[in-house]
Length: 375
Image 1 (tube, helix red, strand yellow):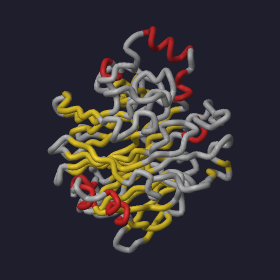
Image 2 (cartoon, rainbow, N blue to C red):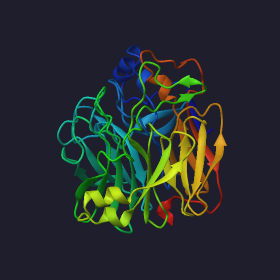
Image 3 (cartoon, one colour):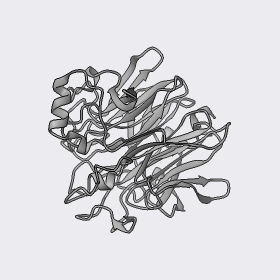
């Protein structure tokens, strides 16, 4: 365990913000999403604004009196809610091989429709601490009402980014999920596999963790979420949360924006069941695909060469594992955030007195193991 909390807390810029945060108990809806580390060894964590009162949606972990707290990144000004050019709600992001952070802004706060200009892909240079580019994701690519921009994979070799839109941004409405492809050279987006069976929630899907049904009041319905790009950049893997299957499609088809949408759909391959539902995914420089195991409380591995699925780590405290990443020093890092307890309906079931509710984990894999980005 690198860091752990019973609930998240921040290094606030002033006493007023700190007092308001604690008096309203906004921490009850502060969930760590993705965790990453840069080449300097700094750790970052996203906290999506799925409720009001989240102080900052993208953060760096710092120590305050020996305890880990969050500090807004790249600044508090950049995290102002209601300012469409600032970061509104970040879940997925990536730190590439050039030490640049690709930040995917969902745009929406508390599941309200995304204001125009708020959905965007921002590129931030971590060495120079400055913005390099910002690309607005329009309504025709990610509908402001239904979109739920989730995670992404970056391919500098060919100049593309792949994004999952989980399509659950409108509560109590059918899922409208898809894959979004971004061409770095032209600055254009394309939406593919919209409504395709592989990107949607599996009909009637139910699952439980520790024999406790997830979301006791109503079933969880989330489309494609986890996404991973093979080390040779030829295959994109993805999966829904509401389902156990892993899917794949050749990136050559996705990179050609003239490929008919029907042809992309026909090319999707159902790899098979992971034996568990999954949130975060990632890939290493050896060709392996890593996936979180929600039902089995840990992290699993898929080896394309053998077609085998394997469990590599599990722990009773790994409740709702997400945010798989690499530290480029031979280890994977990930977090467990008890999403299913924090956001359970009709009432949360999380025990806020438990010290290990939220954990950032590190596991050594091998001295030569790095992210797919370093293949």
